[in-house]
Length: 518
Image (tube, rainbow, N blue to C red; front, side, top):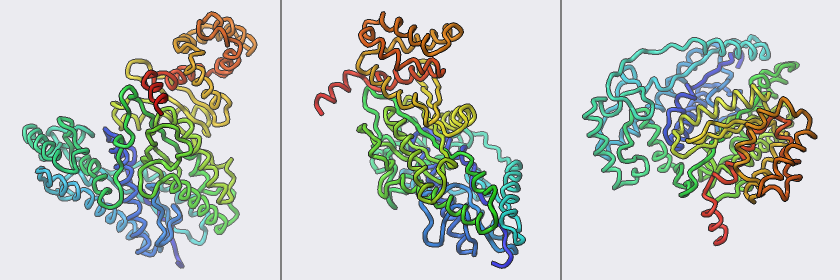
């Protein structure tokens, strides 16, 4: 390319598109669709003579795990035309996905047609944004200006206002439910469709009297059925099935820290150095995300860190973002293993892992909690506690029980308390520490924190406190030493989470019976 431009192109809105979900499989489908659209855009970019800078995606070697944002070098005189072409390509592919849903619904008697893009809200569910800057022979300066211009362009997002006044979709609550939003027609159509689905492979996608979808949410709900025809279907809780007496699971969200700053290459000497750095970062992210996937399964590729029968399920891995579900007792170990994989990917690319850190959020919740709500909570926990409160390179943990106030805590990855939490869980499981004590510790900490100051004072108080317990008196000294850092480190709420992991995740008698017959 003689005269080139840096084009930044993104597909979104990511969080609202993925987050409009009731089931874990809906989360997976939304993220899978976005990754598919990004791959389609990159394929078209290659055809148009563009060269991706981020993600690292050479012609014929596009990674499976893709972020929603693309930065590419394109011919300057065609930059705007290429951006519009990519936009059209993405919407055409989205139209094919929606069309598949219409075809599939027709198989069970729910017949609808694809409205023109300018007449229906299905096309507005996804939008593309872009900006470009001329390089003018200075790649370093253009890279900086391009990032700033794209950030500014995101402030203004034009939209078409389309009114829909009928019966709303049960998932998003925004768009009219199929077939036409008329309440009587909606009820009749979906009742018939649910009955018909029971006789087909579509039965897992519809639950009796729980389905009333718009075209967009139907496209996401049915996308796994499309995947099954091509490769494999995400089985959600069919593989990850909570057993009776074990109604809780963990949603884990992880995100790289300050990747934008790293990609700008502050201090890069020249264009060649910056290009090489950006390529190495992008390649490291691609290898990291791909390594978390199985070729023919939706399971998270970290069996060595899993000790439970229910396998962890990978919802999304693209760039530095990871989202998965797992048994609550595996969540912290799995998050730690993902973090180590992240660091190793940068080491393999000759990059300092201390510069490229990863933060995580773990939300423990009941299986009846809507998946979209949990995604928003995990995203908030990640930003608010792991990144802002703890300064990044941290893991935030939240317990959301249906019958109790929420509990939150956060640890730096290298905090000894994070690893010693496993010991506390063990003490609770072995009945050396009464679970009720973890409830009262939080209130006692609030009252005594102005009186007890150093570790010695807390240890003495805890030893006396625990020696009065029927279960803990024999090991009061050891338990006091184990628990003191949680009081001095202001992490007492973590003890409530330890109790949950030890005695509330599943019915103890059922678990012990299972172990006895194993």
